[in-house]
Image (cartoon, rainbow, N blue to C red; front, side, top):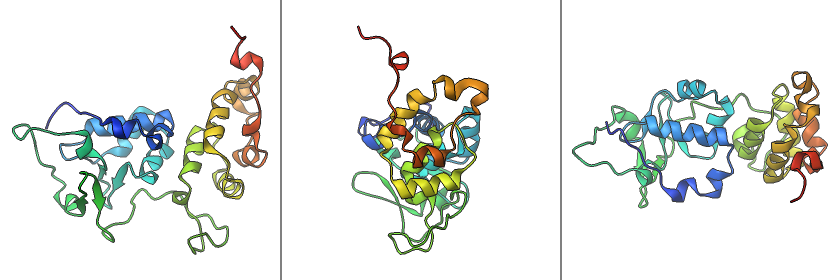
Length: 224
């Protein structure tokens, strides 16, 4: 198996990639570095734990379709062939032949899962009942709202996920503004003192539109 891996700038410089939390981006790079010569990897969760990444980091990669999962627990890097070209004398075919046979390759060398082959083995926690979705389903799943997963991966308090999810659907906050606000709010004394016991619940944060708060001069520094 080749020891070196490459990354296509068209993928890692895309808004879809750069909008993900840094921990999610780091997990993607590590998964790609450890994948076999066809882009397959069988221990994504182990690598996630080794890096100290949250479960939601892997879920974001799946929800945003940067990684394709299989029922066997194996997954593949969707844009692998855009990233890497391996010389024939160094190429070692994947041992995950059954999984590879469930994929097709588009003209741009992107892996695509053949319709109806598998279900997502990394399905998110549970479906959250909130009435009919826009797709006519009786329940929404976290997969329907990948931006919520980005928020949840970045939010430092983790004890009301379902309530936060319902609040997210109701309010549909702007993810870019939310992530920017969290970047400085997590450094405020109110959120850092007493082991973070004064951090609001996620649902409270969302319903109160607290991403609209503005940083104090102490947080952004004095002007030059």
